[in-house]
Image 1 (tube, rainbow, N blue to C red):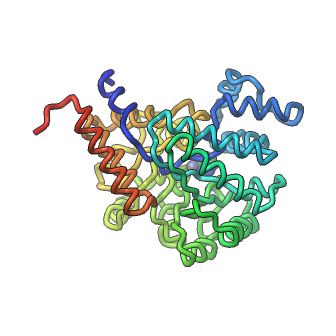
Image 2: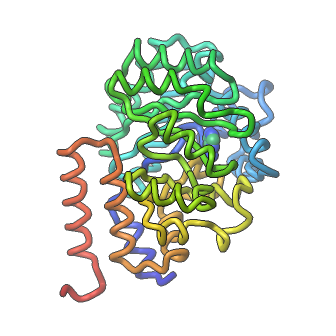
Image 3: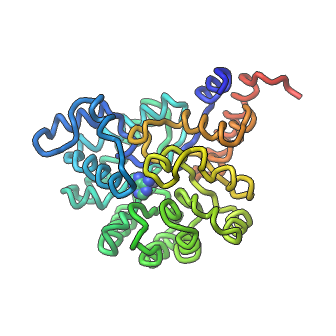
Length: 346
Ligand code: ADE
Ligand code: ZN
């Protein structure tokens, strides 16, 4: 990657559509929380050791470590500090807008009351926008491994509290033994209440999981969806119905969902005409950030500055930011390209 393209990516105004709040916490913040709760956690209280702790054998091991970090969020101040720190890190990456996936049920079972939880995240969201200018929205994620009761709790919280920042319902965790259809009633109720449908599917299992997410959960975007590549009819369906995949290349290698970046299906998905966006998932856990994921995608897809700017535009266009915000952010990207492009204007 040329230094010019790296610089262009670093300064490019961006939107991120797939990033988990706990997974986005910096090693500094995670170590700080571990120090607050020393004695109760296997997570190290030293940022350098936190980075070493994030070495995953496989997808189940990743989920286990993820929950150990969730365990560190015990007080309203822990939650606020985490979200505020994530917002600051995003702003440093020129992320102007992010849909942050947050899994309320994991916090409810650790002692947060529904109203308190929503007040804290909304306060942190407003402070992030005031302090850094980055606009956050929420995707409330069902932790699929915990079954229908956890989905019931997530949906109740979403519909009863309905924080202003909430735009969508998600479904995360494992896929093996967790059929998407289990949660069809929850997604139907959320959609009827005006929330968007953005489940994980086809991350570590096959194309059938993505079909189920589309047919049974009314998915408008799919988190990961990379195994769609196995089914040409599905690729055609995603392209025709403009169902965007939130692709997270480095995540897929770190969780062993794909064997290597060189074998990542991103180029095949793009070649099939499927709309894609590039995202981080759980950036410090995977030793990455959004600029790096753009660089990875640029390598995989042989993109120049124009191609990279198109990736940023695609994320804005597939977002739930609303017409006015979308238009403004697209205009900001256009202005950046006009001022910073090394290619002569034609
Ligand atoms: N929770 C956090 N990261 C996740 C991922 N990559 N897949 C499913 N659930 C998750
Ligand atoms: Zn995810």
